Image (tube, rainbow, N blue to C red):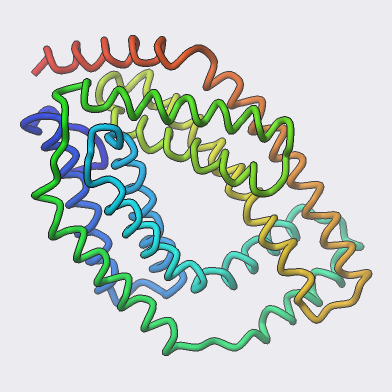
Amino acid sequence: MAYMFDLSDADAAAAVRRIAAEELAAALADMDDSALSEAKLIHELRKHVKMLRGLIRLVRPNFPGYDLENATLREAARGISGLRDAEVLRGTLERLAAKAAPEAGPALDHLRSALAAHPEDASEDAEALDRFRLAIQGVLLRVPDWRLRGKAFNLLEDGLAATWQRAKKCQRHAARSPDAEAIHEWRKRVKDHWYQSRLLLPIWPEVMAPHAATADAIGEWLGEHHDLAVFLDRLAAEPISAPDRDTLSALAARRQRKLEKKAQAAASRLFAGSDRALLDRWGTWWQLWQEGR
């Protein structure tokens, strides 16, 4: 089934357990899929973990096991994050190149050569993936025993409100102090809200789909901003000339400013209003959806 609540679920708690088990099983299946390149595999595994963490944050105030599972998933993702760094750097470089003026070409080519020379340690990659597998298997074994307090929308509303409030708070902080850390924290909270709106898509698809799409777009812009921040940090360690470094830094910083502006404009609309108003709307839609069983 899809990553969303369904009328066939016995109740909201059963839906949370079902969705979690499906995501965990999908992650394990991806690890056994020989058709996936390593870069694609790491991308998919990290995506499964993010979706799982978005799910359990939805019920966090009513889930006594949250701290254990969130820490396990966070460390599992962190353990394989280094395996994607080189791929992210290359992808960021090519996105910059697509928008760069011709005179930036030599600097871009010099960095391409430097990145291509990075050594790869296949044994380290295998060990990291083995640790990831064990962590995911452990969470999957515990899912049937998850205790979740609350029924129907009552199980979800505290987590929805908390995510909404944190996303708005992080947006305001990022507007005042738009450093890489503030933008990254804002992005995580927007992504949480995106996952949660996806989970609730069936309550009124015609309205929830564009809402989720907007949250997704903001998250993607802020994700690119974060990739650029990592790119800028890594530039100092790459064996390229100071003029090349300055050229690439200016390109990245200019793109970051544009992304910030787009994200702030869209988020001001998406997160307008109070968390109470959101809960009233979505709670009513949930009830009407349930009555249509």
